[in-house]
Image (tube, rainbow, N blue to C red):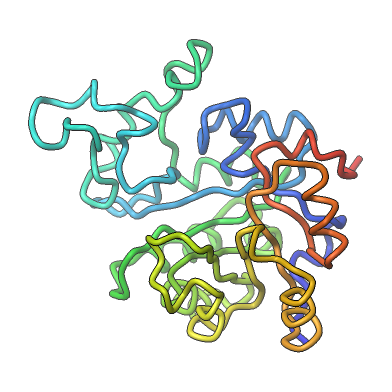
Length: 271
């Protein structure tokens, strides 16, 4: 059997998806603070490596959806997609407003670095860090994440309150070789962007995953039995926003949930 993830934390594990993203702009400090303030014990987030080696917390590979292109100079980058994270310097990214799309009260929210999140909230939350990597080649993302976790305030304490995941099995295998104390998971779903050979969780063997993160619709009684009883994996489904669905998944043995609306699920929270 594989060791349990975050064994010192109350079950079920509850991760606010990209922070409390139902109410605040995703992956911003405002969303992470709100998750903390509303009693959520954990947050899920996405991290990219910028061209100048910074760990930017943002979901998409381009800034257009959450920052628009209004702040960009005329040219190809301003036509809908915005800046590409891996090809931009962090100074370029932090000049963008990633809060105004959620409402005027959040205007001025900026893209943050992973170090900033750990510095402010590292002693109050646990973390699910998704590595946003689309290629097999090593361009330094995993090494930067491992270094950030190890050097965060609290040292090993952050590693003990942190898990990592990716759709890219090569990425989680590489991270595991660098910081083996952090549990890793493979993400998967049935969407066409994912190669067919990875749409049923096959990446768990390629990436040597410690636990599983299937899309919620992938979880059935048969799959739960296979993962838990036959293969020895814990599983953490996403993205679970309805009480009935959360109850179904927990009854099937889920260790917890990742949710945009964790405050509405009626789950117990640490006091």
